[in-house]
Length: 108
Picture 1 (spheres, rainbow, N blue to C red):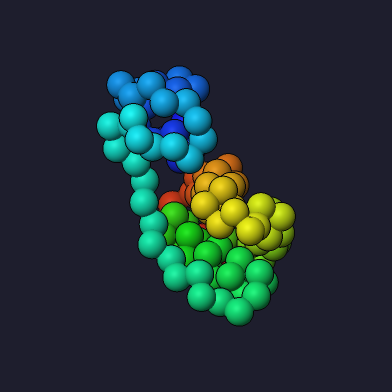
Picture 2: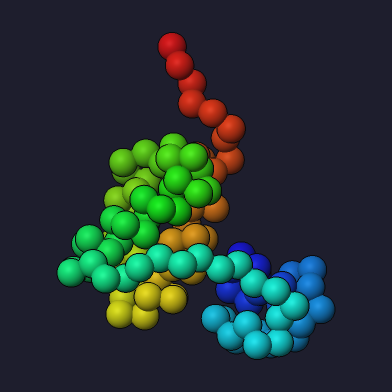
């Protein structure tokens, strides 16, 4: 999770050269992941749904199961009002999901 938390740096075994090891502080990182999502939703549920849906599309081609989405949405909402920390948490949880580690859906 080093790239998500610290950007391209050597923190937590990362393979970059930057040395700033404060989560969410990318000032000394050689690069970082970025994602622009509008947080204009009226409530936490709608915001969590929008973010998880967008990440699901980008990282799993929309394959996240409903139960996995619910887990990630709940974790996202627990991190609010810090939307940056909530986004990092959602990214990390998606990276650990089975849907992230598969390339297609099984059709029977």
